[in-house]
Length: 239
Image (cartoon, rainbow, N blue to C red; front, side, top):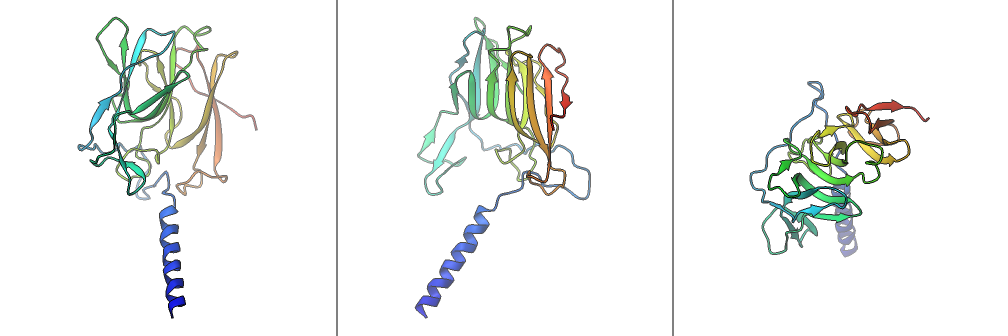
């Protein structure tokens, strides 16, 4: 009897564990209407702060990372937005011309001025902001490239790393903030091709509409010419 009881407990634990490990789809489709970008809900309980400004070598701007205070929930071994003792006031990291974190915005300040320019007027979750330090030699502008989430694609009521990641670009001043990837296509990766003065990137489309991005979906290949004032996205087919 005791052995059977232990086996039942173990089986129940395995079932619960499997449920917890099941990934939430990155996209949830509404079958009653066409798919449209859905803005995330505004969290009025957030405590928004800014890191000290970052000065990128070779530019004339300070960049202020904006984000939420991070609270470490030791019981769940993760960060949460709840109040607690283990609070982190560091919201970003900077290394090799790239800012990383989970940032709600960036503000740009010309050196020698007190004016601040906000990058995005809509809710976003910026994961990387990269200065294209090798591009200015062939481009008329200094540029930044961003990977971020801009839609609550899984409809869980919040904007986080579980939503689709997109690719954006702007000038070093934060102006001309422009989306390069297509809505509801997940960014795979991107890179700067210095000699051709292009930014190449790949996205994956959920062609079977199962809410996940896997081997059964289609990969799309794109690039922009940095000398193009409009940053027109062009497609190409290497395979």
